[in-house]
Amino acid sequence: MSLDQALVDLGYGGADPNAGETLLSILRRIEPHPEVPAALEGLRFRYCIAIISNTDDDLIAGTVAGIGVPIGFVITARQAQAYKPDHRLFVHAQAAMGVTKDETIHVGMGQFTDLKVCHELGIRSVWIDRAGEAPNPDWPPHGVLNDLSKLPELLFS
Image 1 (tube, rainbow, N blue to C red):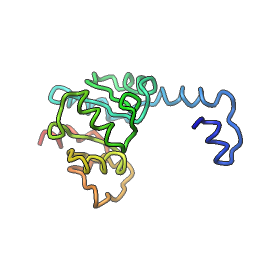
Image 2 (tube, rainbow, N blue to C red; image 1 turned 120 degrees about the horizontal axis):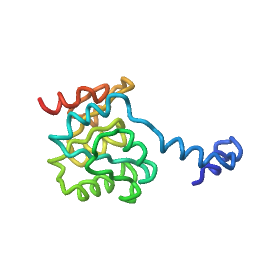
Image 3 (tube, helix red, strand yellow; image 1 turned 90 degrees about the horizontal axis):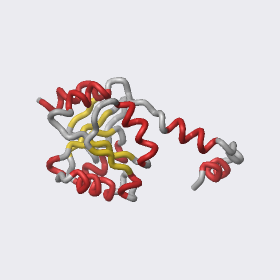
Image 4 (cartoon, helix red, strand yellow; image 1 turned 45 degrees about the horizontal axis):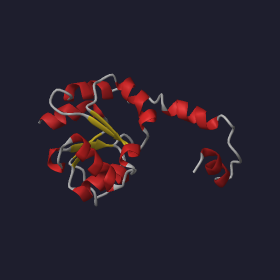
């Protein structure tokens, strides 16, 4: 569905002709949370770091560059032709990285898009709960943090 059609469907009328490009330019410049580069730097010599994103390659490229830490793999929904919470995205990521579920620790912010899928696939997970939400008892993560700053400590203990 196009941005214009989505706005019409929501009752906002048609989009400005430049709205789509404006939105894409904003998405390409999304910066990481402040603690992310240091946390990933602390992990990268012990773990292969991968980003699994519900986006296209060109949209995530700016965010990855903004992290400033080498990322081993960037797996996108476009590559897998599947969006979270579709299991195919996670299966594709594991195949692309050459790892098994037992060699994987998934760190994510979405209960439905990350924790539920990890629970269903038997992948260990750490939930980054930035909003102070109650966890869904049906998809318990293996760890909960309010940001990534303590992730190296959690994984190394």
